[in-house]
Amino acid sequence: MENEENIIVGISIGDLNGIGGEIVLKTFEDERSLEFCTPVVFASAKVMGFLKAHFNSAIHFNIINSFDQVKQGKVNVFNCWKEPVNINFGQEDVRIGTYAVKSLEVAVKALKHNNIDVLVTAPINKYNIQSEKFNFPGHTDYLAQQLEGESLMFMVTNGLRVGLLTDHVPVKDIASHITPKLIEKKIDIIYNSLKKDFRINKPKVAVLGINPHTGDNGVIGNEDDTIMRPTLKNIKESGKLVFGPYAADSFFGSDNYKNFDAIIAAYHDQGLIPFKTLSFGQGVNFTGGLNRIRTSPDHGTAYEIAGKGVADESSFKEAIFTAIKIFRNRSDYELLSSNPLKKATKKI
Image (cartoon, one colour):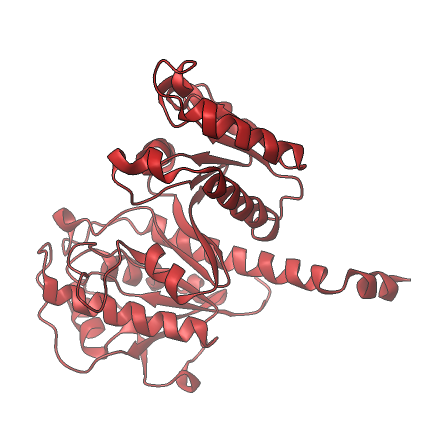
């Protein structure tokens, strides 16, 4: 392949007792991965040495303490801590959670300072990362605080993109969170992301209803009639190709999703259950709407198989490919949009 711009991909190591370390090793044991990106793993030399020995990996690391030591063609490991860490695969451990947070915090700082181009996060355990200093339901909420923009959980794979109106919200609270302002904001984020990050000029977006059968004319809740329909009508009149609300129970099974560039689900499981059913192992969680790019695989820590050498790295690879593709698309979009008159003049 041609020597294109070699994008620096930062990787937070996630929960060390989970499968994160294994899927990172498996991804970069294939040296072809190093032809289109330069990985920087945020962990420690001792941890990565342990993982290499445990999984009998032939991978070679370039251990660094500053970003001027990053080398192309190498798997770089940025030392986030020096002390040894006792790893017990498959165990939920608050102490291990502190290292997941250290890795993430250093990686995000590097992302903000342009030391890395994109961030790919290995899975964390949402419980064991909690502390007085770090009190977030997950990566998305932390990134929303640290970076600029309005965040959107956007699950993507070939032919299917699912965004969420609400993400980590208890089911009993969903309806109270969904307001016209929220709907308008999330549709703006997803619409702009489709244009900027996925190069779709006139996106078509479907929105799923809040209640079963979109409320059945108020028999099963009135939120779809009083909030969703009038809001979508106003958005459509503004020129956006937005359709719905659609009944969620038949939308995916009927293949209707194939007629749209993206689908917005009202809540977490309404969108993620069909997404993961259709694409598990190939899906990617992309945090849309922010000024920096972050992706992750579509699975969790998988404690039940951690340390056994059987984890599938496919989704993690897809997360890397997707981050690189979005980075290039966004760079092209910003270049073309910065001064279109100047670009047109140059062609004359």
